[in-house]
Every structure is written in C-alpha cells, then in structure tokens.
Length: 321
Image 1 (cartoon, rainbow, N blue to C red):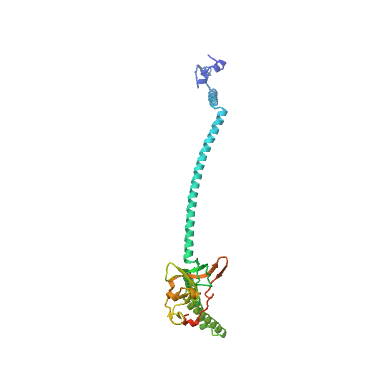
Image 2: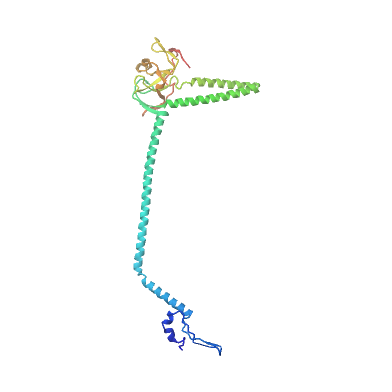
C-alpha cells in the first residue's frame, strides 16, 4: 500500500487535479478497528489548487497590461476627445445663446422704435407740438424773421376743460349739501355767516363755469387752418366770440358771430389777412392755443390772452360773456 504522506504523492500532478479519490482496503470486525487506504485530495489541497489558478490568471492579466507610456498616451487621447466633445457642446450652446440674444435684442430694438414713434405721434397730435412761423401779421408779438411757437392741441384743451367743469360741478354739489344741512339744523348767527360765505362761493363757482363754457377765450393767440387755403396754417388772435356783434371797419358795418364760430385778426392790422377779409372762422379749424414763444438766440416768453392786447369796448355792439 502506498503511503499518502510520501513526498512523491504531493509531487504527483494528478493529486492536484482530482477532487476526491477514496478506496476502502479492509475492514476488521474482530479487532473493531478500521483501516483505510485511500488516495485523497482533501479540502485544503483543493483550496490550494484554486488559489494557484487564481494566481496564474492574475499573472496573465498583469502580462496583458499595456506599457505606462502607452497608457499615458491613451489617457491623453481620451481626455482630448472628451474635451473636444465638451467644446463642441459648449460651442453649440453659445451659438444658440447668441442667436437668441441677437434676435431678442433686434426685436426689442424694433419694439422700442415703434413705441417711441407712437409716443411722438400721440404727443404731437393730441398733447402739444411746436411750429415755425414768420410774417408781420402778428408783429410786435411775433418777430418778422420767424419764431418757434409751442401750442397745446385742441384735444387736450377740450379734455382739460371738461375735467375742470366736472370738478367744479362736484364741488358746487358738495357746497349745496353743506348749505342745506346748516340751513335746516342751525339758526345761530355764526352759522348765518357761514351760510353767506358758502352762498358767495357757490355763486363765484357758477360764474366760473359759465365763463369756462368756451374752450377758447377772447384774446387767445391760436394756430388755425386757413379758411382760404387748407394746406396753410396761420397764427391769429381771437377778437370776437360766438353771439358777439362787432364793427368790421371804420364803424361802417357790423357782423354778428354765429354759434361755434370766432372772429380772428392779426395784431398788425395794417398788414394782416384775417376775418376782415374772409369772415368768421369755424371753431373746428383751430389746431391749438399758443402758450410759449421762442425766438432763437434772442428771447423766449409765455403768451397769455392779455399780452399785447386790450379789449376795445367801442368796437362791440354786443359782447357775450
């Protein structure tokens, strides 16, 4: 029988390749002893064999690892490819961003231009505007060589007049209510004085409303469309209002001004083509009221209905309020 502990048995390659090899040789029942004879690949040897295989495989994988220089080259190449991919992505993002910004700013610029044009158009046609005028018909108020006139548009004047009348009406209604409360509940002398003050205030406000029923007043300098030539604008002063009766020239004839009409003349009556030539002017031909005069490099001033004008009572047969 071969001894299993002999060195030759450990050197045998078949020992490492077989998992278990058992042989029962004899069994003696008389002596109650067991004699085993076997060629065994026990668990320890099996595990050792697996460890050796793992070491061999690891050595093979180590032999397959590329050289350090080649490995560095691969890493650099990988980094460059990733960087190029990231650069291309960032480049696309930047291009999309700048395209969006370019389109957005161009649209925003166009929108601002349109808004500015609409604002300028609205202000010039409905709030106030300026014009250059020349001639001697309004001398000495307006220089013969020409000045810049600023005027408030007719729409703004009418709107302001309506709002002012509404405010005055509301104020008068409040005063009437206060007056009625005092009149019903209080008879003291002190409250009588208060009642008189309120009554005088109401009367003054009522007179103010009647005087403000016309948008334009006597003596206002206005810019209007010429009744003779619709393409021409002229600057004149209002002399007569509707329902007025006034003499035209040298007290030889007079005219009654119809409703919604005015009588306009120039300050320089010797050199002015005005209502004395073409008659009364419809109020709808008025463009606006002059409020500021600018004489470049010389002077500037505000214009009112009392500047360079005094009412001539002898010229009127009847003067409306």
